[in-house]
Length: 274
Image (cartoon, rainbow, N blue to C red; front, side, top):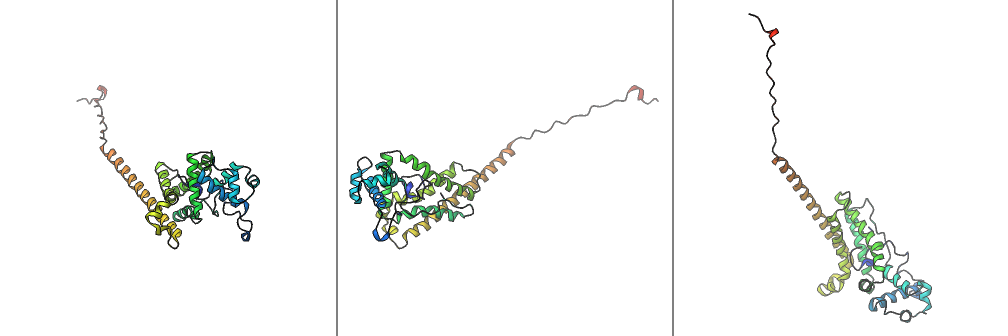
């Protein structure tokens, strides 16, 4: 399935516009550590999230990344290019983002939630990305609109398409759109509410196979939401049919007027003579 209305769009299933390389994939040689580009991206993500775009200088980024300032121009052109890459490029390995037409609802939902879960496996990078997206909404540079158009919207449309197939709808209505938003919201909350989850129920994010448990449960919760919507639609359709029958029954039936046949009399010529 091609994630969702919240400041964590880059943490959802990989957006369609993402570059072929990601924040976590630009490693020249594992023996030599992260590449220059990767160090700049990680450092830029951290400083932009903590200080904002305006208060972060290229010199500070280069110093923290332990590279020459010219490396920023070489890899990204300028500070704006580095900010755009840190904001838009995923920092996890990308899998397919759109469910195949023959997949079950459970498979399509698992694909969706795997996209939400995968970034959480990368530690504080996920939280930094959340902070950066929040900053972009409060201190806009113009990238948020691009993220919605190219990152969030395709994922939402793919989810809507999967729900339409499952519910047998030719086109989505407002209630199906609402359902899609709520289903995606389950995954979004794992990011924006991570600190709250750690405070209220710390074992949920720390137990063995915690992320696999989250993915399994989210699929089950989403399936229950879809089942409830299907039942609501079935009940609504039954009520509509019942009301239609009542309306038809209440309409008075006007009897058709009976036309009397005119009486005919024999003509004088045909009268019987005594």
